[in-house]
Length: 408
Image 1 (cartoon, rainbow, N blue to C red):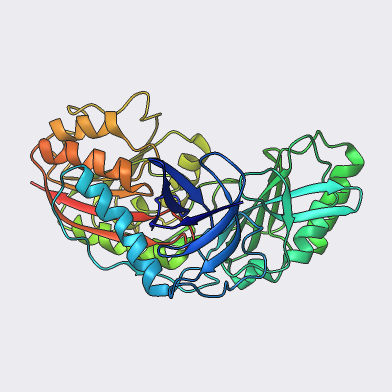
Image 2 (cartoon, one colour):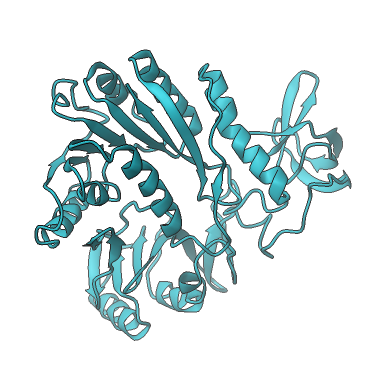
């Protein structure tokens, strides 16, 4: 056992103590606390809080501390928002970008429409929930303060469905998306299904009222097309597709992006996914939408065509922008551009944008560190950063979305 004084909360949400010039990371602790720990090395386990921070509160979920889904339910609201804002501020400072971010946009509990659960068969029955922090063990849950009621209220139905899916070595990965036509359930890491297992799962999915069930990329049954409303278009996303986790967060980001690009006649949407931005931008502008996922591009193109001429033209291209970014000459006819890459950012693509004649850029990111790097490239290329808005759609976690608006 060792006692430590917590100096700060680090970028991954753990409390940080300094000992003999080393950093010691202790989860579920807050700055100013004195804590007792077990273990050795740079990562310790919390045993007892000896001196409690005034920012400490009771967690909203009884599974907190065991379930690995949330890291920061023990931090009071003001301290949490200040800490999360600092994640963006510090990343910008490290890149020598001088701008004051807009106020944080945050959302209430029970607002996430998409969640990825885990399930594992055991001798005592099925465990359904989230994996334990830093472990593959599945923590069986009975509640979740993060997901929308449409998901939370179907936990038993999801558990029932998963109990008939044969597991493999890894826990089952169960992606659940709440759509206007019901829950879209996509299960991965199952072993190959027999004919009887398929029939059982189809029957259960229908009886339990799920819109669609996919197992190991195979759609077993689609009772109703899962649909998402995106402006004046209706999108049926492919199984397991990326969508913004919170519908209201998506709308807030769409308003920032479309407002910034509203005067552009031609716009490129890079890493466009199923059309979150492209389908809204097409209300005013012609759009080139580029994405590596062929199923996502297919969903976007179909949604656009089904608007029957209510939107301006959207041209689509399936292309891996990480390996083959659009060159600056390919962007010569674009007035504006939105880019929403994965966590690694888009350094190669950003360098091409910096060389192009594009006048306005909306950069969307879920990683302040790589966003700051990419913004630095654009600023060096002649862009001026007009604003940056943090969007906290990953409540109780160290993950932070942001929308940066640039022009030249």
